[in-house]
Amino acid sequence: MYYIGGELGQELEDKYNRRHKLSTYSAEYTIHILKEYVKSKNLRLVDLFNQFDKDKSKSVSREELMRGFKSINVPLSDKQLDNFLYEMDTDGDGEIDYSEFTWINDST
Image (cartoon, rainbow, N blue to C red; front, side, top):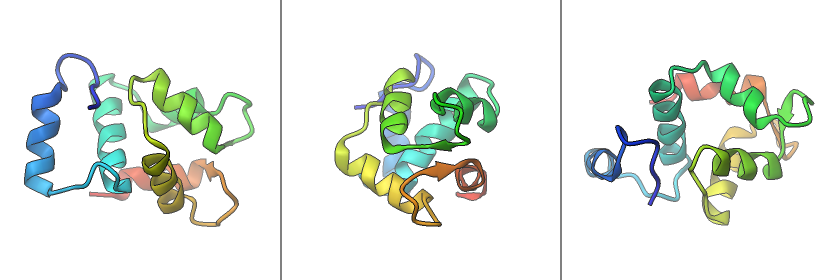
């Protein structure tokens, strides 16, 4: 399963999943993981986006997302990544730009 440092261990993730009954394949679950990561590392969302955006194109490709999630110890399956990309990519161009990425702040 996923982990984000000691303070966000498996127990916390299991508790969240029981409370919200989220599938680990849902985009909402992945958004939760990202929000917890940003909070636990005292980062801004823009910092995480810039960390993922390796080519500085102001958008994050599928490959950059996969590498970015791995770099923060959140390896996603292909299905999880595809679900997240599908949910976040509101303009359908196959990438997530910063305005789409900031939707994470508005989600539950």
